[in-house]
Each structure stands twice: as C-alpha cells, then as structure tokens.
Image 1: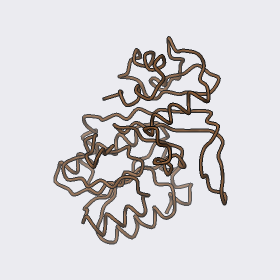
Image 2: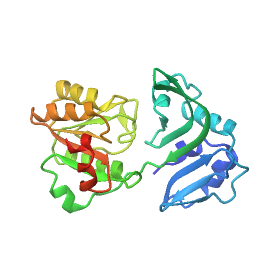
Image 3: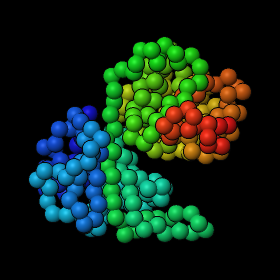
Length: 258
C-alpha cells in the first residue's frame, strides 16, 4: 500500500507526523478547521501525535490544490461532488459552504473539513463468498465497513477466474487507473470505465464491451436501478454495493426494495 500520494499533498510537518503512524491500521486522516489533525485507526479517531498547530482553512485549500495538481478547474466535476481521487485510489473528501445553482451544488467554498480515506488492496476474499459468485450479488454495509475493498476483490476473483467484467469506476477508487492502467488489481479480464456515472456507464459497457458481469459501487439513484434492470434482461450479472446495515433495512427503503 503506497501512501506517498497522501503524504505528498500534506504540509511538511503534518506529512512527517502522519508518516510516523502505524499505517497498517490507518483508515483515514481527518482535518477540521480549528482542531488538531486526527487519524482514524481501527474505527477510533484520535489526534495525530506530533501534529503541528490546528488546521486552518488555508491549509485545507493548499491540500486540495496539491491533490488536483494545482489545477482545480480540471477536477471541477469531482470537486462539485465533494471529493478528489489520488493515485492509488485514495479519496480526499471535502466539506464546506456549498454554492448552489438551481438547487444543485456548483462548488464548495470556505472549506471546513477534509477527510482522506486510505484505499487498500486485500489479498483474498472469504472463499465461501467467492464460491457463491454465480449470480448477481449485492454487498451491504454501513459507511467505512469495507464494501468497496470487498467489491474490488470480487471483481478480481471473477476476472482472473475467466469472466469478462465491466467495471464502472465512477470515482476512480476501485481500479485507480493512471494513463489507462489500473494501479489496483482488478483482474486480467476487467474493462474499466472511469469518471462516468453508473447508469451511463452500464449502458456504455453493455453496448461496447460485451461483459458477462458489470460491477458498480454504491447504488444511490433510481436511474442506477433502471439501468441494472434493463442490462439484466441481456443476461448480464451484477456486483454492486449499497449502504445498509441489514437486508431488513434495505427492504424498508423504496429505492433499494425495487
């Protein structure tokens, strides 16, 4: 796991302090204006030992600028959605004052928080799960429970096992492609579509790549469900994730119930 893309966007003093953490258990870095930088380790948030002074808005702006290679304009679409993806699939999440146009977020100003989530490549998924991957499969869990990590491993296992997999990597977290090359292992027979919405990506992969499986992360909208339903009529199977603590909670939500 290469954390250099994360350390490189932090101020020097904070980068040095973060590098001294036990990175094998590190899940996120949490930076909030007016507070000491914190690390999320094994589900517990605590101040980073040896951190410099409290976080400032200027510090957060510099971090975002570095994360976009000093070109926030080129990352405008993802910034509008509140995140930037780093090499390796690490995600920088943003919070601040939203500028709206026609009730839609156009940009985030006066940044108040930054969350840097660590992307991890696992070596294997539970064998009992992989043996059951013969039909469309939905992975449920609360935020931060490892759904994306498990989804990536299921994609890799299917792909290396001989199936053609189309992967809609909307935020660049699953494959972390750089110049078209996945930086995380998603299997030899996986075709990756990066930076595209799930519904549009499903239709594109169906038309262009003849997939046997399509994988998407975090179903959130009715159009996602419609695209999956229509693609399923063509014989495509799905791997997908959704935020829910249990199947019962899933069924209580109209979108997910369908």
